[in-house]
Length: 213
Image (cartoon, rainbow, N blue to C red; front, side, top):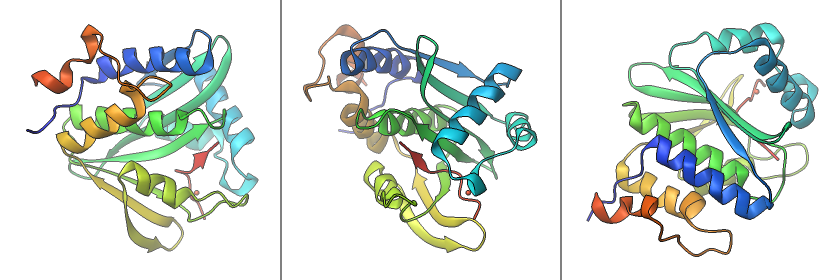
């Protein structure tokens, strides 16, 4: 039986609970479809913390991205502290491009959670696939390409001036599995049984998509 993933709104609600369990404090996830000046500053700050200089975006570039069709920004924060973000926009006929994924806090699964939320959003908004660019390893030796492969992206080869091309063809069963693994389970690895979790039974170079821990 093919599982159906939750709605994007349901996944956001469950993610907030998962982060509270993992981090031991109240956290929030905010969704934006346009960029106010303060959001641009937040993106640039995260860039400065997690990207080497040649991969950091300029303010003008961020503003252009925010004006593109289908733009969405997912921002994770606890109080005034930004913990991670992901953003992307429409690409081609039915594709979605995951431009940036950045996690400031290490070892808490935030990168995997953000990637999962992005693909849930892409499926819900009738995209057929998600594409991103990354590199095999970053300057600290972290295996970025392997991270995306574990999420379910396939390596399509390298593209000059872009880096490693990663692609995911979207289907409900695959995304439902990702949701269960990275969001629905509690911090100790056991699934939650609350009412909002019954969805499964009922139904830059520039390389700029990098896992930025």
